[in-house]
Length: 84
Image 1 (cartoon, helix red, strand yellow):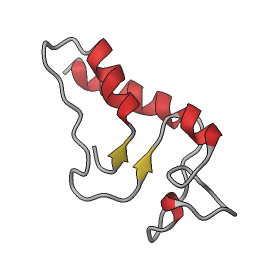
Image 2 (cartoon, helix red, strand yellow; image 1 turned 120 degrees about the horizontal axis):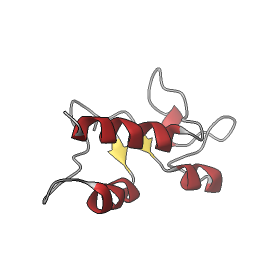
Image 3 (cartoon, one colour; image 1 turned 90 degrees about the vertical axis):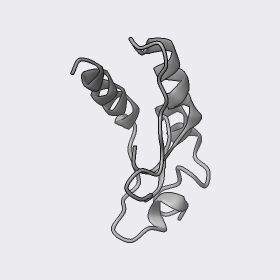
Image 4 (cartoon, one colour; image 1 turned 90 degrees about the horizontal axis):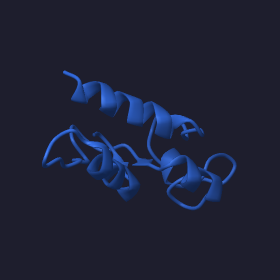
């Protein structure tokens, strides 16, 4: 995955992967920002802050902060990849 994903994504993959061994890789093809879970978005903080609080997501050129719901989109996409 491009970006720095929160550890909860790896834990979810560990529990749900149809494969014996699975690893989530971050920083592939560059890194633009953190990818938090919806729970962490609600908590705020440096990795998840959005305007007007300038946290990490807005320190990268051309980036917008993520919104709740992104976690489900990521999980659905990973699940789709397992079916290939």
